[in-house]
Every structure is written in structure tokens, then in C-alpha cells.
Image 1 (cartoon, rainbow, N blue to C red):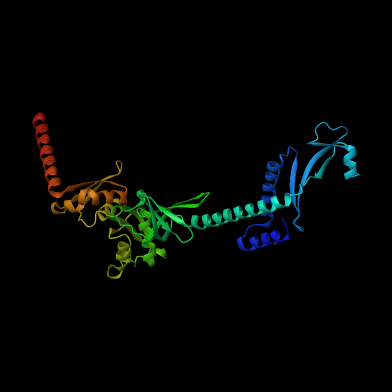
Image 2: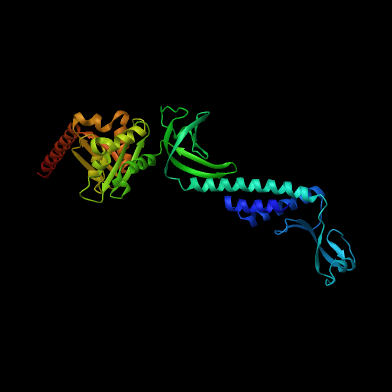
Length: 366
């Protein structure tokens, strides 16, 4: 090593934020390993770097004894006194054992260690940068494909969009830009592993936060989200200001805000409904766009029986049960949808049966 390398370490400290002392300590550890490997040392050795001159020195710690039984770990008192006149038996003495050609080894090792530490530091900085973005939206460009996974160019690194997080039937083309939800960021030896999603319900929520100022300002809140990515979603919203209509705020002037979100999700249909603390009202709202005549709540079963006009039954249930399924996810209630005529018929049968039972009781009494 030399002064140039020490000056380089100081520059690295300024530019990369890696402590010079930490780098020197790492170099010393690596040099110790190199010394033991190249010189087959069995001694209790240490390596020190003079931070003023850059000189590398190897020391062997030996115990001062009257009679040496193991020359690797001991030194005679007579020899020790020649080195340091103040030592006495039982003391430990550091004896320099630096090989003649160790400077070359030291320079090569130091460069390797410094480069490795720089790479590690850059990985750590990158990891911390993206770790803070967990749970947020990022924009990336499709770079390439690996099997069925999509690799996204984030500028400084790549993100992984696995098959499980891709919207069904969505077309992915190299060079296309996408809005993505950061599901998880983990640290690896090759840098941060960033897992992103196009299907996560929170992606929908974050997109509305970007498009709707009232949500960003905390006036309107998205209470719950139910999503079947690529097909249809529902969000329940409420307002902390009675003058602000939460549904209207999310729809936007001429539907501009919701349309922007729909476009970013490639045409996914989105129902925006008003949240209510009253379960009957919330369940009825959640089944939008279907009309609801009545909702009967069973608190014990956490279920709701919903009555709709006969001509609204298919709309309330939705294609392959999608509307009812999303409403149940949105509200957290089991939903059983009945058409009005069926309920009336059942109620009539129950009434007739009750009347017959009453007549039977009267006859028995007489």
C-alpha cells in the first residue's frame, strides 16, 4: 500500500459515504487472511496499516518465557530484551514479521476489498431507497421477459413482475411503461429484489390517491377495496366534510378522474360506492348498479339477505356472480340475494301455514 491508496480511501469516503476507518479495518482483516494463506502462518498474528504513511506491517504476538517450548507463540526472555529492554517474563510482545514482498500482496488485496465494499455500499443505498417505496406506486419500463415473468427497468435496478401479479389477458410489450405497486423489497447479494404487482387491491387505492386531490388532502377516504384485477373492482368511500360528495369527488368532472384510473388499468371496470357505518345501507350501496328493495341483517352470522326487483336479479348477482362476490368482499358480509316475487311467495306460504296452525290450535281447544 501507499499514500495514493490512502488518499483514494479519503475520496471514497467523501463520494460514497463509506468510512475510511471501516475500509482500513476491512483491508486489515483481508490482509490477515491473505498472510495466513500465502505464508502458512500458525502464529498469533495481526495486521496494521499506518494511516500516516500507508505502510503495512504484520505482527506476531508472542509470550515472553524463560525457555521456549513453541516458537510460534513464545519468545525467550533474552531475545525479547534485545527488542524491548523493559519486558519481563510473562509479558506479550508484538514482533514485526512482515514479509519482503508483502507490499504487492497488500496493494492487490486492498483494491479488491475496496471495490467489494463500494459494491456492497451501493447495494445498501439502493436497497434503502426502494425499501422506502414498499406499499407505494412506481413507474417502470418493461425491459425483458424471463419465462412468463416480466422484468421492469427501474432506472438503477430491475423489478420483478411475476405471473401471479400480472393482470389476466393484459399485453406486456418491451418498452411499454406501467404503473406498479411495490409489494416487497428484500436484500440479496446481487442487490435489492423488488417484487411488484398489477393485481394488488392497493394499486387501485394508490391510483385514486394520485388522481383525487380530496383523498390526498384527507377529506375523502377509501374505506375498503374489492378487486378482481382486469375485470371489475369496487371501492367504498366516505367524506369527512359534509359538503364534499365522496363518490362525486372520485368520479371527477365528466368522469375524468375515474376514467384516468380505468385507462391505467387497461379498461378495468370500477364501481365507486358510498361507505356507511350502517350495514344495511352499506350492503345496498355495495350492490350498485343494482337497485335494492330491502336488506335484512343477521349480526350473529354476519350475513345479509338482500331483496331486489325480479328484473334486477341478474344485475345484482352479476356475470358469474361477480357483482355479488365483490360486494361481499367490500363489505365483509355474506350476501344472499333474493328476487322480490320469490320472497313474497315464501312470505305468503309462511302466512298461510301460520293461519292453519292457529286454526288447528282453536279446534283443539274447543
